[in-house]
Amino acid sequence: MKSWQLQEAKSRFSEVVERALKEGPQEVTRRGLPTVMVISIEDYEKARQSKPRPKRSLVQYLRDCPCPELSDLLLEDRNDTGRDIQL
Image (cartoon, rainbow, N blue to C red; front, side, top):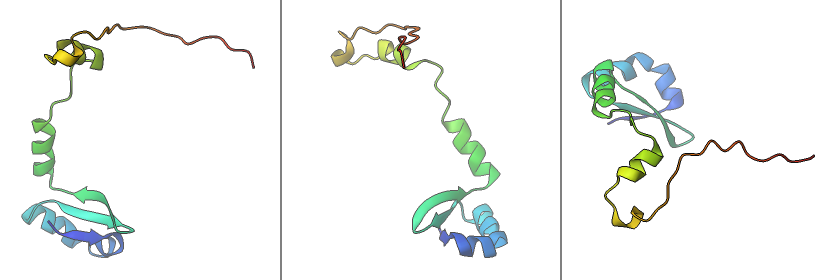
């Protein structure tokens, strides 16, 4: 995977896109830190389909977890509206 500095990626954007299509994801850095990836739509769709979104809430996930450490955990859904305070 090629890494591009932001300024270079901006000035050579067509090449960045072409490489993403032919070679795979292209990383773009800003101030030396990885910032964004340029990927083909095909790679994007593969990644999107391989990671389905969770369909359960965190509470439901923890309830369903077979972990013995969590078996004694009391979990309940609350619609806590907070408390009234005077300012």
